[in-house]
Length: 157
Image 1 (tube, helix red, strand yellow):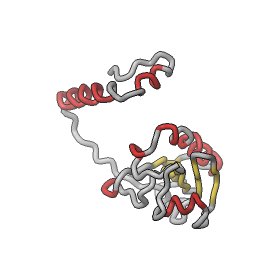
Image 2 (spheres, one colour):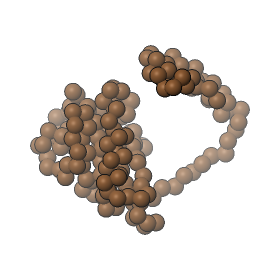
Image 3 (cartoon, helix red, strand yellow):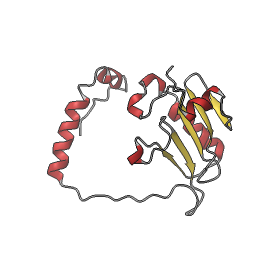
Image 4 (cartoon, helix red, strand yellow):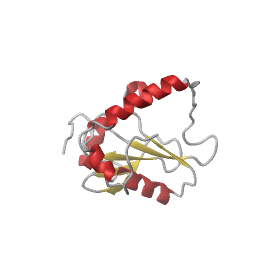
């Protein structure tokens, strides 16, 4: 398991910094956020240290969403956001992958976001689709993994 001596989340996982732990397994740690946006705001993190989602091995991500789902359920949140940022320009503050489960009890509490949607140029979107489709089909092991999903074929529009 990878960890960083300077990482605040790695220190929390090791118990060097106290936390309000909600769940722990071999791969995942979940705890309440100490600067919550709303009641029940929690973090679900892989124990494997990596700054961005793409730095974490797939087998260390298998429990993340099921744990986030359970945290949302036990929080009693009817509406909530699940947020994961990658890189400082994308608003990541702690350089260790983490997923926020943020209850949204009303318009003022919880996560507030804007969605600056762009106009779509269908020709550019089609070209991007072809580019990404060709790249994703060349990822080693991905087709094998996706093939196990009830015969779903990857990357068809």
